[in-house]
Amino acid sequence: MQPIRPDWPAPAGVGALVTTRPGGASAGAYASLNLGARCGDDPAAVRDNRRRLEELLPGAPVWLRQVHGTDVADADEARRAATEPQADAAVARLPGTVCAVLVADCMPVLLADDAATVVGAVHAGWRGLCAGVIEATVGAMRVAPERLLAWLGPAIGPRAYEVGDEVRKAFLERDASAASAFRAARPGHWWLDLYAVARQRLAACGVRHAYGGDLCTYSDATRFFSYRRDRVTGRMAALIWLERIDQAPPLATNQAVTRS
Image (cartoon, rainbow, N blue to C red; front, side, top):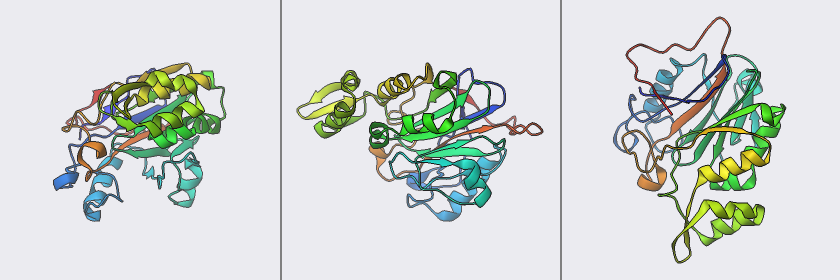
């Protein structure tokens, strides 16, 4: 496995990573570390992949049923009840609760406060981003926004994400300043910079410190799944948690780790 560890000044006690394609049991279009259970892969391979992932974590992730909306799950409660909430973001305050979102072009946003008391994970495709999933998550964390740090994980980049007029219109109807995140492609179509919109939304709700935003899933088929590029494909996971005092997540010495 070759997970990516965010390069951000998160406080001690916050753990986070994003998985990449290598190191799993899946084959064909899903090769190899597909963590998505609803994209057509062999369920046994997905279970094996999730088991391998858990070796890097303090516990099993709280998986979500993602619907491109703005609902934010209480991951601590979902962990206690062993449920899989329908939501596109999750927050946790208890050590050992692992928030997780699945992505394959949509942007994962990881959040933590500067005192390591709360963390959050956001699945931000264009629909959720436009509708306010980042703002909803910041609100659910219930700390002053200026105390939060954000990291923008691998997503389809601004030179690869072509959208139609209707997408641009939806963003501009909510916030006219989003116009700067669009660049003309061809008649009726635009290149959209998801990262730029995310930074605008974070700043607008008071989050002053945002990092990452420089990894394109579409252009790197070796490391990343991409729905726009391949259609039939797997999913990566972006995960964040508060460390248990008596147990840091293990990382085997023969596992490659990159930072971004």
